[in-house]
Image (cartoon, rainbow over all chains, first blue to last red; front, side, top):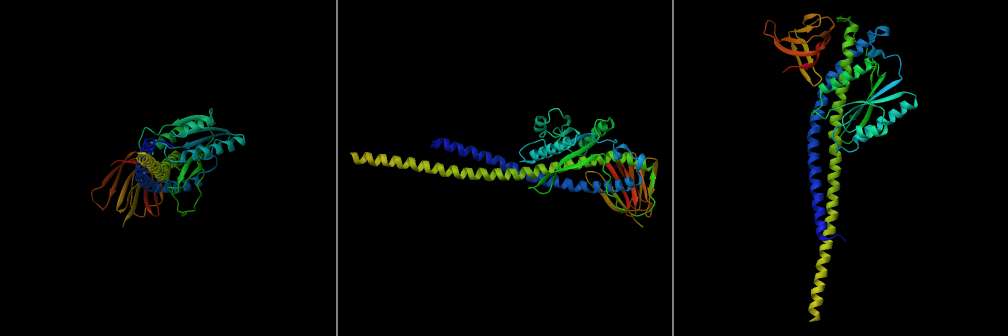
Length: 289
Length: 85
């Protein structure tokens, strides 16, 4: 049986761990509210943009469609853009994402496609590098800024479009978590390049005038659409990270509490045993006189 | 006699209000939008959007960067990548 002092130290150390997890949980809860608000505020822009896209894409079709919409004509080389968090302490969020990416990569590989990765965020790097050592083509560091925002999304999108124009890949998929609640963040896979033609909702038949022209507008719109998609993914990862972190830390705090209770009982028992032994010794000594 | 004007950036909905007229810096020249404008879509160059709340009043100037404007049945929507101030 462990000595009294060792037990006491152990309880002290678990207590201080509990303090840390509790603090992290509260911080995550506060940040989650902020991240959710940011995600809400970004919605109008994305909605308007995709409705405009739908209207335009249905008009410009066939051979004059820009490459970003029509594709390169082949679908041999796939790029998986995996969005991970920069920090840990958020439960299984990152490993779920990495697993989803791995499954998708194997699926594509089984179909005879070439797969490469483009990594956003720090936490996905190590496991993906281990599993697919030669297929990481590039990564983007979001850890230098506190809250990755539209600027970062724009940089990533520009880089992707550049790689696409240079013919480095044919199809790009974006892998990111969808924030459902603090308990559930499901990895989602969306195709972002070529831009999937949005479902056309037949709006009014009014003749819309375009300036400069439909194709020019579409050409400017498509990269912007990719940026918006990435921005959405960055917001989702931010909300998911805080949500997952809150849940994980809540569990950790509860576990620490249980451990403290168990150790305290053990500590009290040992102390009582020591006292009893001492008493017996004293009584035995007194009787011997 | 009011035009519904919305200014949206990726970060948030900046403006959503009824105004008299808005002058937008289109890629091929500035254009003013009043109520009942024909459906129209244009890219925007970086510059100032002038919002006239009332006829003849002083305009409110909003600097925007990158985006496009859409005039539809439900008014004018300006999608900008960045708004100053």
